[in-house]
Every structure is written in C-alpha cells, then in structure tokens.
Length: 316
Image 1: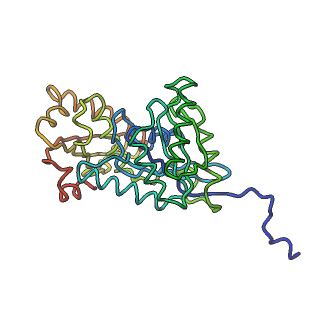
Image 2 (image 1 turned 60 degrees about the horizontal axis):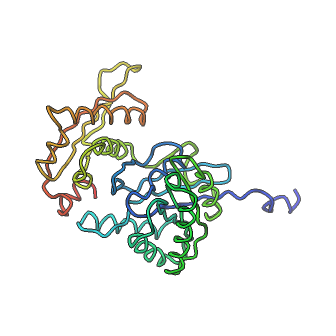
C-alpha cells in the first residue's frame, strides 16, 4: 500500500455540519423560514407575535452538509418574568451556534427593535452573521432595494460586517434554497450530527403541545397569545387495541391566566374548544402517523407569566 493512499483527497467535497439560529423581532418570519428550509412543519407559526417559546431545531440534510436550525423566541423588551427568561434563552443560544441569521421583514421599516437586536448581536464577535430580509413577496422591487440598503447601514452603525444579505420569501418559496446554500459554507467541516431522515430533535410531546397551542391561538382576540400555555399530562397507547388499529390517548391541559380567558378558549357551548381539538388532533395525527384521541381541559393558573413557581411547572 503506497503511503500516499491514506492522505486526504484535496478535491473531495468537504462535508460541513453545524448549528444556525434565526433571530429577529417577534413575527419576523423566523418559524416560517425554518419550516420552508426543513420542508415540513417543525416550528409553529401564527400571525401573532411571540408564538415560539421553545428552541425548536429543524434539520436540513444535503449532500454537502447538514444544517441544524435553532429557532429562538423573538427578542423583545421584556415586561414579565417569562419575557425576561425568553430573552435569556435567545442570548444563550447565540453563544452556542456556528452562524446567526438575523431576520428582518421587508414590509416594515428598520426600527428601534431591530437596532436593539443588532447592537446585541454585535457583541457576539466571533460568530458570522447573515442578514435575511424576509417576506419579500409583500413589497415592490424599489421598497426591497431600500430595505436592503437600510439593513446594510444598520450593520455598519453597530459594527457588524454581514457575511451575506439575502432577500427571501418563505411563503412564495423564493430564494429559500439560496439561504441554505449561503449558510452551509459558514459551518465547520464535520460529519452529520443527526441520522439521515430526522427532521427535528424536539420531543413528540413538546411538538404535540405546540400544535395544540397553535390551534388554540387561531382566530382569538389579541389578549390571549402570551397567556396561553399547554401541558401534555400523558400520551399513552390505548390498551386492548388490535395491532392494525392503534389509538394514542393524549390528555392535555390548556392554562390561561384569568376566568374570562377560559371562557374565550372554550367558546359558546364549548364550540371553540371542540374546534381547537379537531384541528390539533389532525395535525398531531399527521405528525405521529397514528390515530389520536385528544382530551383537552382548560384551567386557570392566575398570572402564571409572573410567577416563578408556575413558570417552572409549565416548563419555562
């Protein structure tokens, strides 16, 4: 065997793998972009700010590498203990990833919220940063150009040199592959971190709880989003079922902060809760690939967002 044969082949393509996180103001399109890149729904999306509370990882498998996406809650000026903890979670995430994608919607002018995040990001000096201008399907070309220039300038103002500035529309599926193309070279060389075919490492119970919360947030008034938490009490296969007809029993509690909110979630004669159950059940069945019996109860946990003991109980 010649001594040359075990030398690395310089022309062999380098496989890269690592973590990227998307940050940005609430509702900047981070979860939608994560789902578009992964090609399936791993992060819940809603037209309301502050939907994401858990760091959801979506995994993008490609021949040249593996990109693990860490989806963080939107960074915002916290008004509650929950808000403060979510912000701490975002900063802790930045410290551990290989590349940061800062999402800025094309249809909203760069504002104080974006500058606040940019200034925070500038502190993470060693991590490469990519600016991703989202929701480009909502604006005309002229507005988009203005926004790209504004983003460039915001970086200069705080001392960030963007590795890339990418316009993208996750909804219109425009440039989504380009985001992965440009993030991949910024990752370290290395073997895959997750088995092929795995799309998220989020436990099924957490994902099921998130799907219930998403269904419950559909179409309710604005006072509810932050006040709603879902805890799955148990998820167990129904006994005495034939092997070809399994059924999974899922028992979940929806927690709100006030009796008036409980009434909103339940709706007239329980109609709303029934609707939430039907929608969530379909999504959970699609996620787990098995028929589900979903049992939902609404409970009041007074001011849980401000109470450390309740926050712990609800998993924050």
